[in-house]
Length: 287
Ligand code: GLU
Image 1 (cartoon, rainbow, N blue to C red):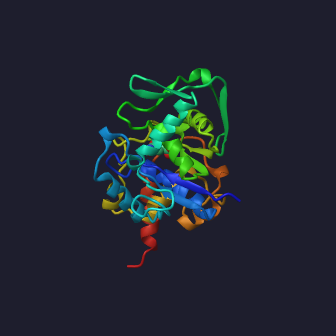
Image 2: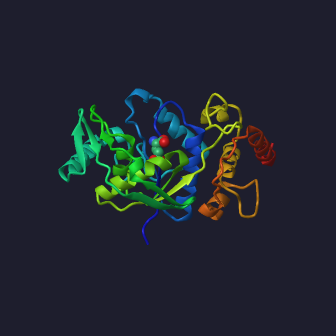
Image 3: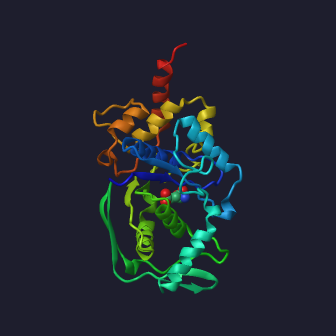
């Protein structure tokens, strides 16, 4: 059987975001359940938004929450480098390959992907069949004029070369997926499985944001939340325990996790629930 390989790919833009950690937990559990590998990749190609300290903050958050990755920039691995800024030659090489095959072209100093006619569909592990008609998708940039790749291109080249078998990420990327599948096909790479998790929401149903909720993991740490309470809370937001339990450990999550029990409706990020869970975990501690 093919090895299960999943990844979390945060952009180092300032803080370890609770939304990223939520996605990381699902990837971590799926990898552990299947004796696969969990990869951390730093997507640092957006130079304008790059914050030098941010990478360290990400490592610290993963460590605090017990999310041990098997490969990553700070520990390396067989498919490195794991920082996109160190992989620019690869993006260039494959963009050129697409030009040579007449599947991409140069315009205004950038390289554009030529969207073919037709349709793209996939069987999402959480949402079932999703289909896009290519008439809705225009040609798009894969390599910018500053020689940096666009997100859609870098992510495909990396997921392919890092042999990622399952892409588990937030639903905000659903509209990127047809573009990415087209690139996989153009590169003659196998296409991974996709699972799009529901996005965390503020109580007014907007996408979780720092204006309405604390999103930095360090805030939770400073406020005295226990890592196991935060982990339990985040798992519970997107997934229902088959025995309807509210309080469970990460090991139990790993044991019982299945995409079937992931909800497709927007989970509301309710700090009151976290406070309650935190109390449960604190009372379990000895003096
Ligand atoms: N850097 C992207 C993000 O943080 C990764 C998305 C993906 O998993 O493909 O949203």
